[in-house]
Image (cartoon, rainbow, N blue to C red; front, side):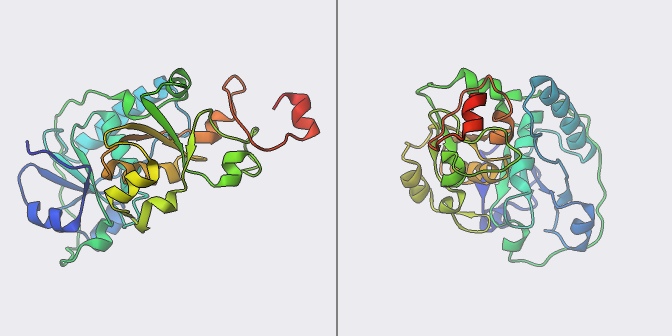
Length: 275
């Protein structure tokens, strides 16, 4: 099977569209797909990783996603390219779900269907089920246990994609019981990694911003995994071994046993509670 880059553009897809080992999955849903889709694509809704990172939950989710893949005719022997409306917010979480289920070659179409220059097809398409067996890859979704275990690991960089007030603890979402960041994390706002919606900055620019060599391992997180999913798209397009931690600060802040750092002075109540 030819090697599949994680991020492909419309020119690449146009060159390879129609090849027997290429499956183009439209994650927007069957109704949107019927209204207009890239010719030859099929609707493929895989959802998003959960906001909690329990391995038991992930194992069950991997089985469910594998079932969804089979129902849509995906075998795991093809190159799977995922298409969303164009901002990456649908395709990138779906790619992580496909990898969790065990699909070995998954890519995201940069710019989604909005970047497709050709005519769109309309109408429903027939789906043929496959009998494939997928081997779950639970490591595709970082858990809080993994992040905790690897704090201080020189081979791993934690990248916080939130704003400076969120990172420092001076501001944040009131639903979170603690404010601050995971110890040792670097900070970089997601907008810096993109030139436009769904269009990452050049790999050279992303590597300049991140300050790590190509191939470095990165786990990105934000408040609830949305911004960091986008960041993971730009990071992987730049050649990093990047994963999104979907639980992010929303999960981490709820576990008092997990360490945190904060640059903001604590309120009297927080000092009393040891936060």
